[in-house]
Image 1 (cartoon, rainbow, N blue to C red):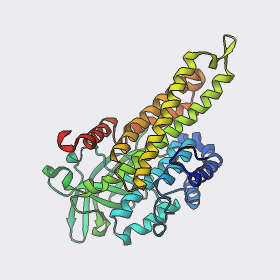
Image 2: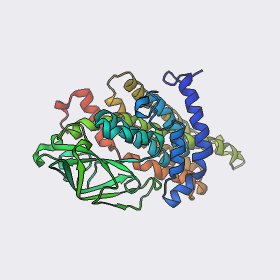
Image 3: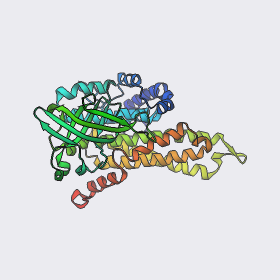
Length: 385
C-alpha cells in the first residue's frame, strides 16, 4: 500500500532502491566527507549510473522521463544519508531544468548527459557581495564583444564554487536602472581563462562547500546564453519553483532520520528509574515535530505533483522552501537536546544541525519566500516588496 496519495507503488519501489544505495554507499562516508571537505566524484558517478540524478529529464537529454516526484523520493533518500552529498542531486535537477529549457541544444545537451551520469557538477551563481535575491543590485557585467560575451565581476556564497565544472552565471547586460529586466544568464565552463575561486570556511555543508568566483575578462561564446538577453533573471529563475520543493524534502528527510533515532534513544535511556520516554516533557515536543514534519513533507510532495501535472505551484514551492528548512532545524535541535551531552559532541546529530541551517539562507530566505507566497495570493501589484 503506498504511504500517501503522491507516492504510488512504482515510486515507492524507486525510493527503496535509492535507500539501499544511500545506506550502503552514501551514509558510511557522511562524517568523513564533512571533515575532509571533498566530494567523492567516484560515488557521484556511481549514483549517476544508477539513474538517481535528474530522473525527471527526458531520455534524449540523459534522464529517464520519470517526473519530478521521482526526483523527490530519490532526493529524500540520499539526503537522509548525507544532506551535503544530496545537494549534488539538487544542483543537477535545478540546472538541468534551466539548461534543457533555455540552453542552445548543441551546447546544453552534452552537459545534461554529463550531469545525469554524475560526470559533471553545475553551480548556480547569482549572489554577489552586495546583492542576493535583489536582482536590481547585480553588478557583475556581461558585455557583448563580437562573437563572445565578456564577463567581469564577482559572485559570492556559491555552493560548489571550487568543485563545479560549469556554472549558470547571472550578470547585468542592461543599465543599472533596468533592474531584473537587464540581467542575462550564461552557461560558463569553469575552466575558462580568467576564472578563479576562493573557498569559505563554512559552518555546515562543508563537503559541498561555498565560496567566491572571480571573473576577469572571461570570454564566453554567444551560444552559451540561457534564455533571452536581458531576460535571464525573469525566465531562468522560474526553475527555482522546482528546486524549492526538493530542498524542503531534503531537509525534512534529515529531520525524519533524527526523529527516528531519538524515539529509539529515549526508550533505552534511563532516568530516575524510568526510560526517558516516560516523561511527557521529552515525548510531547517530539510528537509535535513528528506531526509537523509529516505535514510539511506532504506539502513538498504536493508541489512536485502540481509541477508534474503542469499546474501552478509557485506558492507551494515557496511554502516548502521556508517551512521545510526551518522546521527541520528546530526538530533536529530538539532531538540533539534529547541526546544530552552525547548529542552536542561531534557526530551525526550535530552535523545534521549544521547542514540544514544553511538552507534557511541559500536559494531564497524565508522573508523572500513569504513575499512570493503573498504575491501569488494577493497579486504582485498589491505586494510590491
